[in-house]
Image 1 (cartoon, rainbow, N blue to C red):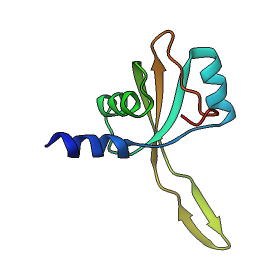
Image 2 (image 1 turned 30 degrees about the vertical axis):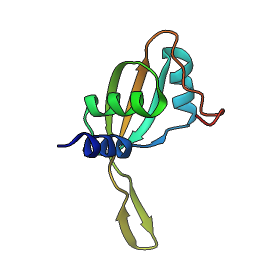
Image 3 (image 1 turned 60 degrees about the horizontal axis):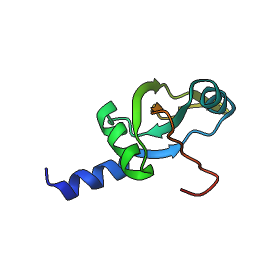
Image 4 (image 1 turned 90 degrees about the horizontal axis):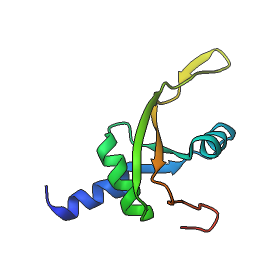
Length: 102
C-alpha cells in the first residue's frame, strides 16, 4: 500500500466526534474524547488518524462495538446499522478543542 493511499485511508477512519452527555462526562472525568469510527477500523489506525487530523499525541485507544437498535414504523420492523465508537486518551498537555474549529 502506498503512502498516499494509507493517508487517504486514515482520513476516512474518523467519521465524527460523539458529542453527547455521556461523552462530555467521560471527557471531563477521564480526559478521553469519543469518536464515531468506521466499523472496520483498528486501534492503530484510529490512533494514527487522530494524530494526523488533529495534530495531537494519543496515549491509548479503547473501542466499543455498538449494536444497532431495532426500530418500528407501524407494523414494519427495521434495524439501524451497527457502528463503532472509539474513546481516545490524549497524552498529558494535549487537547482537542472542537469549538475552535480545529
